[in-house]
Length: 131
Image 1: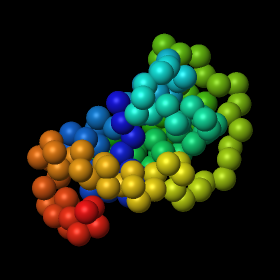
Image 2 (image 1 turned 135 degrees about the vertical axis):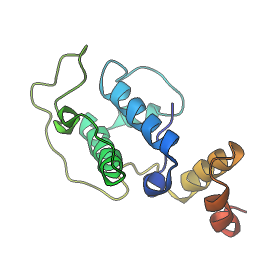
Image 3 (image 1 turned 30 degrees about the vertical axis):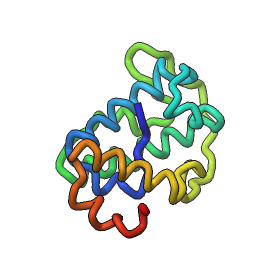
């Protein structure tokens, strides 16, 4: 499980974008607070930040012609098998949403995608910045 750097969301191939949606749905639901090394940082913040990140992903999905279930646009929704929040307090959107999504994390994500041969073109664009 991984949250891709938010600057990559618009560049992600179909499989990674749709996978990101599934992972975010899982994290918003019963996965919230469950230990997983690559995403533990999200638990330091309000679940509203995860909602904001999920909206970024769902908006990109819609731009590409996919139809995520609109119920996920409710910040209190946590999935079919998880009770909703009573009232998740909205917080201001920050850029980046997670401070951990810095230049180093961007480079790590690009290397990860390049290693999977799913991001060859993009990795070449960033090659000079990743050294």
